[in-house]
Image 1 (cartoon, one colour):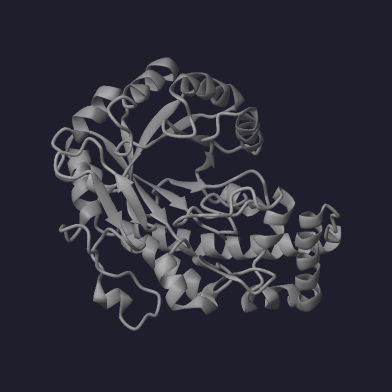
Image 2 (cartoon, one colour):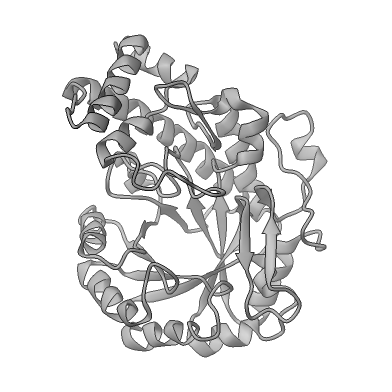
Length: 377
């Protein structure tokens, strides 16, 4: 049996008296609601009071308690685009009152404001170029921040489950302002440019018997080789150690975050945004072997309506843990592609469908939610 959840932001719910009725009419029983989220400029086409919310920095949509955050360099800032003191808490209460369950959607290492303020804590590529949107999980201070953020996101607030995004390392690919990098690199070059070479990651390489200077040089050669059509792949043993170091950092981050969450709510189910490609970076980083026994489900990105997406769902399903397919009714999915695409995902092993996005979808896209539920529920 397939289950369903729809994604939303607190501003989609608050101030819109029709939001919960729309969700119920679609037959969706649960909402994955942002409790901490990166900066975004979001459309709200069906909201009665606004059409755009410009969330200009990554934020915690809960009270920022000074007793918890005092003295920390990495800490949330007060919101500037919502009046509510506790947007997630209020929105989650409204959803609960309407009979809908709520999963707290928590984004961890994706934070441009903090990365810009403290660049030494960010991912840096083999050319010394930093990614300010990407806090590196190899850094102890980043892990401490993420664990505290996750605990504060659900403390004293309605949360029936947790959905963890960016619980690992982000890489070179990023949807940012006026992005001009699409198609610039081969997948192999992008993978090399997504290897973090910060001081903490370099120290981890040294601990694994690698020379950081040699690794960095090899990564640069790999990128340049791809650019001119003369590939210079890394030695397989070196690649394995690089990936092992990244996965070890992700495991430490996830363990600390999960411990903090379960200290607040011991038995809460946790879904991890993840990708079956072990080299994947971004909001859904590569699955590590340890993750499979530590979380309750994997949410696997499934927006492109191509055969490779169903293959990724099948790869994840073979790992023996419930798989949640992350499906959008927005671009790049054409309206007539959504149902056939979902059919392939369910056949590939998806046991839950997370539908994106209840607040972003315009009037003419909203019926797709109900059609998916009717077809596969």
